[in-house]
Length: 390
Image (cartoon, rainbow, N blue to C red; front, side, top):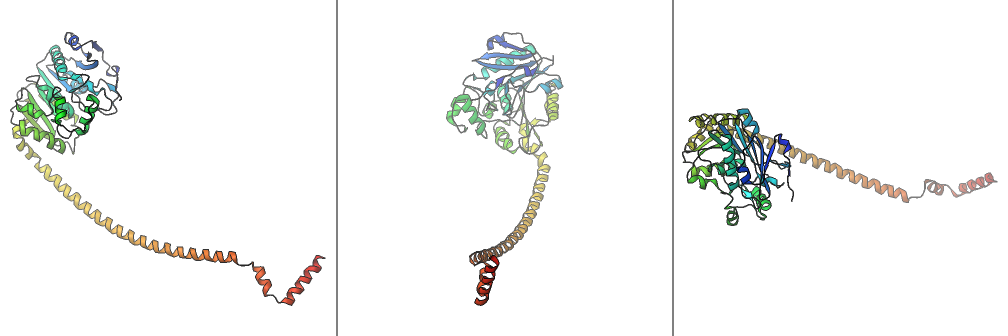
């Protein structure tokens, strides 16, 4: 079972090491990487202090399978561009090379990560000062940000095209997580056995926790044309927790499928939300989730346009199909013609082969000519040859 190797130097910052979580919590934190041991595993946090009023706490989503090193941090570019403090958390469970996402739950080595990371993040926030914290993540990182946000009252959780449940459409990644993190062979389906195993690690569905009431602002940015995440994550979540007054949604058209949000859009949203103004959430394009049915209305023209485009595309494909059928008929006729010619050639070849065999068995030409010469003339020829030889 392969593991990613450790490489601190690629982050070009000093790293501070601690023997335990308690040692980390007792330390005066400086800008740079911070690593403390927990159950024999390195827990890594990157801290950048810019003296800002807002700190961006970033949880990474799925990482590329070809990433070879830990720790893995995201969010540095945005935080630097916007002049924000940064706390980037690396998921230690991604030490398993074949794993791309682990949702900051923990594994059988680390145990549940929530009791470890929550005090670590609180300690970092305390040293950074400021008045605002934005917990940020996309896709699987969005699940982690929304999960951890409840432990930071009055923070803002900004989640981009987030996974809001592990109960649906997560079988492949969940199967890998269970196999490598917990030595459990599974198809990745959320069975009672899996729920029991993960009970201490975190919720498998964020809607149940949100239904009890949000103690923070939850901002959900969702690409309307990411049909899988819209249908299996956002809409089921809103059906349970969408009436909470602190739940907000922004629907967007970023293209078909689970595609990354444009970087400039991320910067614009975080820049506005980090201002701390009461109107910031609406200014950033978010509206109360209870208004989501009204929000979908803005996409009706786009939906109609896409349906019209699909209709045109379907008709064009129909014409191409008809043309291909005509070509197929012509090809079949040509194939039949070539087959007839081939059969005729085979007959000629067979006839020629028979003639060759016939010629091969016939006597030589001179023998056939000799036998048609009159006997007396043949005797005279023989006598002539005898005289010549003498």
